[in-house]
Structures are given as C-alpha cells and as structure tokens.
Length: 254
Image 1 (tube, rainbow, N blue to C red):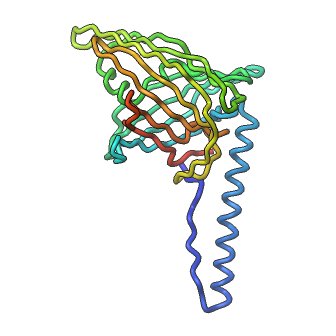
Image 2: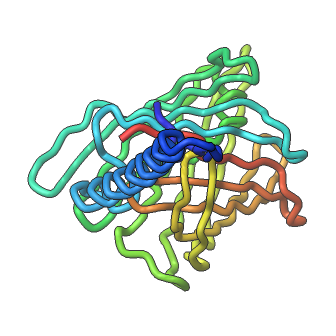
Image 3: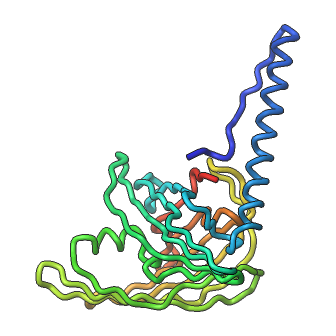
C-alpha cells in the first residue's frame, strides 16, 4: 500500500545543479499529488458507489486509538470478489484487525452492494473491532437490517436506520445482543488531513443503543466519508459524550 502524500524536504544549495534537483523534486511531488487526486476522482466517477471503492484489490488501512489517544492497533479493509451486472455491483469486504505488535488477531467478511444510486452494507459491518473480538470464540447466529448510504449526500439529510441481532453460545452459555442504529444524519462537511492525504469529507453522526444480557448501552458515532475513498475517520463516544475510541485512515491503494 502507498501513502497519498510524501513530504519532500527542500534543501538550499550553493550550486546551480543542486538548485535544479530541488526544483525537480518539488515538481515531481506536486505531480504525484495531482495524479493521486485525479485517480480518486476517477474511482468516484467510474464506481457504482460515489463514496466506497468497488475496485477489486483495493486496500484501506486504518490506525485505531483508545480514549487516551494511544495506538490500539490497526485495521485493514480489502475489496474482493467484485461482480458487476448492468448498474449493480457486489463486493466482499475482508476486514482484518492487528494488535499493536502487528499480529493478526481477527479476520471477518461482509458483503456490500450498489445499485447506482445507493450502497447497501451487510449488517455485519455494524460490528466494531471490540464487538468482533468478543464473539470470535463462540458460535453466533447474526441477523439484522443492512445499513444504506445514498450516492447523493447533503447537509441535514436523514439516513435510514439499521440494526443487528446476535444470538451466541459460548462455552455452553447462551447470550443475546441487540444493537439499534438510529438518528443517522449528515451534519456537514469538513476537510480532514491524515498521513494518507487531505480529503473533503461528508460528516455523518448516528446513535447506537442495545442490550447484551442484562447490560444496556448507548453510544454515539461520528464518521467522515470522502468520495472514492470511503471512511477517512471515525469517533465513538459514550452517552455522556466522552470519546471512547477513534479510527484514522493511514494509507490506501488505488
């Protein structure tokens, strides 16, 4: 995987040749940045989805942080098994989670479909890293409603709700967990800069509530989406508005 932006250090030189090399490096860096942005625009225009890449082999890598802002590990999304029919596209998203030492701790998959006007992500995508790690050692039956994202987004737009229901047996103990995603809304736009580049994003907020066994929970999520790239940043807050974790795009392939 490649990062979008490479920082060039321009060194002053006493010779004409050194000055020429510096100018050449500066020009190449600018050209690389322009080419990357053109590639993002091309992906956005050619894909069935404006926001999520449907290119076979596309890889996005994220760094995960805890509530103190310290690195908790990384997460990688890979687009595979892409099939196209008329204006419809289907892809399998392979999600891998790595710990702080780079060791793989969990791998899962979910499907994503696009009909030219909207993307529908399988409800399994609603399971965050912590949730997936909790259920990896048990047998689970997972049902729910897919989460949908229109190609056309504007500030103030209300998005459809979604839900996921998990019934699980772990070491002979039956456990049920339900999660309702509601109050999904486009709250505005924001420019986000990461090590992967600078992106113009639509900002979406949503609430999640549910119950696991006898324990209830309420959280708020905030997500930044960029055309042709997908998720650039996300933040999770508890019911009191305290930041619990965050995720940031650090690199992606074309």
